[in-house]
Image 1 (cartoon, rainbow, N blue to C red):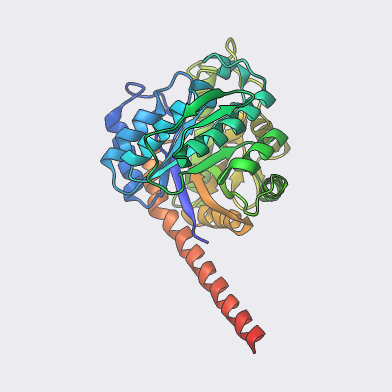
Image 2 (tube, helix red, strand yellow):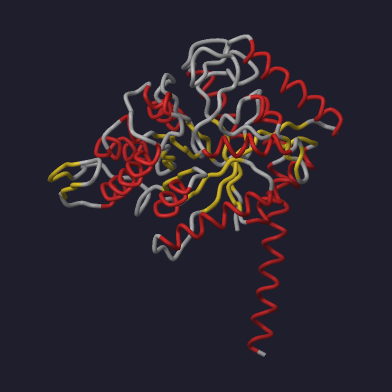
Length: 380
């Protein structure tokens, strides 16, 4: 099966290790970073969402209008707009990008962050709302006759959109989470299910839970699986590990100096996360620093399990082989984001992506050949 690579479409040069050098929305940097991904073999980039961050939708439209090939993964929280409005926004962006849009729906795993924009629902209520929201958006994208909706969270009558996506029947829907409610919602609605980088055995368990949830929802297909990592690469193993330890030191320094905004105010320490995914990352880090071929957990521990935070450390060859281990589990979308956003995107694109693509092509060719031999044997 083909493999795809997802990078980050940051609107400024700040990261967990470095303060941004300019405005929150630096359109020159946004475009420069996007071009670095397009020019170095990446398939798509994520425009993330934060309560006080620049709006990702117009930023994505800006980037898409300046690039020819790079696809867009747009993060969206259902609490910030009505689904009728959002569906039109997404369709318009798919038109601007000429069919390069995927939408990543974020339920929200932290009460404090959600309340920053007026969302007071409980976690399970948010998942129910997201599932209803996705269903409405899909219907708006594919329905050319007015319809009514009377659900638990949304009510409207006689709505029909006048703008439709380029992609037919609709753009893909991406979703993530590690709780039972997340598996149920994503298993039912997602085309792509997103996981944070965990040890291989735990990732295999999660994939099976996603498959089971899709089956329970009555689906005959299953979502594609995406897994996210923070690669730390260097020409030698020794240099890579030196770089990894410097990276963790920089993360800790930024946090202890109070330069990072937290979900729970009043402390420079990483707060205990509410969402299951981050809790899993912390538990994995507490159980050990190194797993499998190259997975390293101190970066996740230093951030309190904040989002995509487990690293893959080593030479390009080591990191490529580690990614192939996940591909062999059934992961075909590999998300990677370094700490020096621009330079790391270039280096990963130059030195890791070609190795993975080459090995995947070999595996696919071998699989096809085995299939031919089996068919020949069966037909006698």
